[in-house]
Amino acid sequence: MSVTSLPHKGNLRDSGSAPVPFFSQAAGFRRRWPEIEARLHEVADSGKFSHGAQVARLERRLAEYTGAAHVVGVNSGTDALILLLRACELGDGAGVLVPAFTFVATATSVVHAGGRPQFTDIDPATYQMCPEAAARAITTRTRAIMPVHLFDRMADVAAFTALAARHGLTLLEDSAEAIGMRRQGKHAGLHGAGGVLSFFPSKTLGALGDAGAVLTDDAGIAAKVAALRHHGRPGATLGDFPAIKTGSELAGVNSKMDDVQAAVLIAKLSALEEDITRRAELAAAYTERLSGIPGVLRVPGPVTDGGGDRDVCYVYVAEVDDRDGLASTLAAAGIGTEVYYPVPLHLQPCFADLGHRPGDFPHAEEACRRTVALPLHPDLTLAEVDRVCAEIRRHYTGTAS
Ligand SMILES: *Cc1c(COP(=O)(O)O)cnc(C)c1O
Image 1 (tube, rainbow, N blue to C red):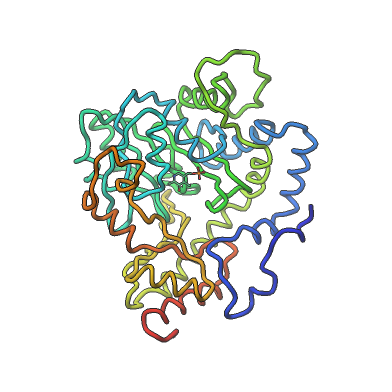
Image 2 (image 1 turned 45 degrees about the horizontal axis):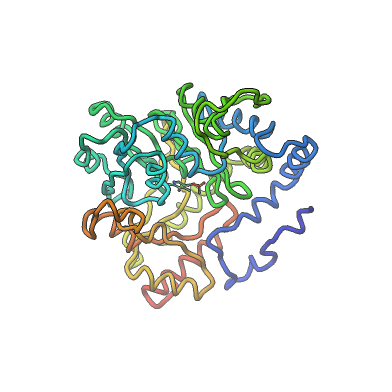
């Protein structure tokens, strides 16, 4: 395999009407190809392709990067959530407070761990789970709170920490989108019992396919997750995964991480800080160009960075009038957009048994109707941002400038 065989956009990039895909990983892979290739050869030469030395190395690197005492690599962010929740042993039917506006896995993971999601509304100014709404949603069955750090900032972890302490609840974080985000020097996922990372390709740190990890400072939770990911066999975290000689202590699953994914992630982790800086520059450029366009109702504020607090712009989400009309205009101009998320969780068919109705979580419902995510990845150019913003201006004003 050589770098030239990877798909790329070639010289389309300079043309004023060239497509701007919502997301592309190709350029990032091209730039880092020598290191990725060397590591992939190491995997091939080692003869161990899953749950091997690269996975153990990635776990150590992520522990250094995040400050977590334990990092357990698994095969997706979704599995990380399920295994983390199972390891917390919240009990059958345990209520877990989650926002109504998030990726569906935040809440389906609760179901797979034997619990019951309890939805709460969001703060319409930030789209994050609202601490006051969460406080009102607590019932006698509630055992845990799991805020999500969504899009471009962390949820109010200080408020959720206080709320959990006040009610004797376990605090967990769906930090799948939040690599690089910190509050008071502490990485996302480490403010309560544990959190997760997703390495789905479009995430801030993306693999070649699916991968994820659990972050925790709790040795007991880490040991349980490490066992559950490998058929319930006691296993090492941050270790070299010794040959298993014991039986299964828990009914686990196969959620081991592939060494190919770990090798790619180690190579990309060394450039993560650069990528995060680039994302912040691009987000600031969008906000500057979109502010004041009629029809653009809300754009993200500046990315927090300083004094131990840092946010990362994982997706750039704008709130607009005529969202679907704008998305069609942009699609016709070759510009990709996404809707994160079109249906609030309380109205998803898989949660029909919880008995919710439209209107139960109005801010979440409105966010689903009015938000659109614009292209944002470290290889996007400022010229591409200009083009996206010019098309948006044209949609609302009839003129591009
Ligand atoms: C991506 C994501 C997940 C799931 O991660 P996968 O690796 O895709 O399984 C869970 N929660 C949130 C908020 C996410 O954005």
